[in-house]
Image (cartoon, rainbow, N blue to C red; front, side, top):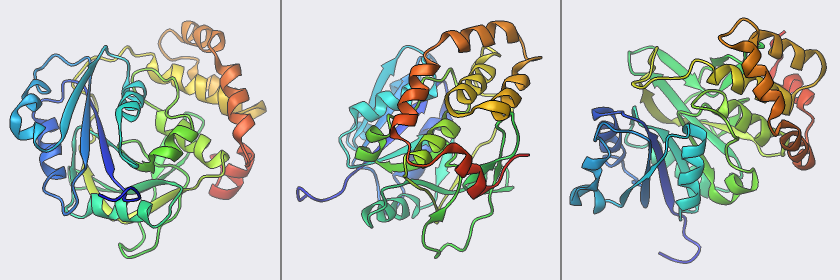
Length: 296
């Protein structure tokens, strides 16, 4: 490989995914382009699924397992990014199936000069089409998938890159500061997409890069019940002001242990994070909603 050649580091965060993890990786390595390295972050799992990846057949493919104390998907992905050596990073959930050309399309888009965060087309494994990129629809920061354009379309701007799979140059990822300090799972992709756009880096849809994702009402592990509410409050404090922030914070009220969640969110480092985001922003957050549509 020449010094200027690109390379792909696949980062998979997993927690007790069982056979889903192995099926995900099998689909990756059946592709026309495969990763130069695969870093599996075992986020405190105990089901033995990562132990099987220590076998020679997976090691020969460049699969490395790195165990951490359970820290949540954002922290797990950041750990993987710190370990990665590739010029390109692809973050992938451990319950996906990649089409044969998915990784090839994402790599080609980054090779073409895309200083951007890339979103592939994601379909529901149950057979319901999901979309390519997403947009915010309300103050809960819930999202709606956007219909993909034809597969041969050039990459085009979308508001959000859902976290199930996204690709980015390693240098861009670190310049953006990685994923934020979010609990368990939920909204780390919204925050990352907002910071990306505000920093002047586009989120681009790559409709020809396709995969299926197993959407589940509940993950195979226990959640605290307060993580998403905390993540909602943190996102609102870091990014929004005035009525938009108040609207989001009101949505936290009525959730389990709302008072505790709000106290912890306000006591955190959101002011420092807000200052850091604003220091690197070249686009105001309200311009984001003017560009992609408001939830009101």
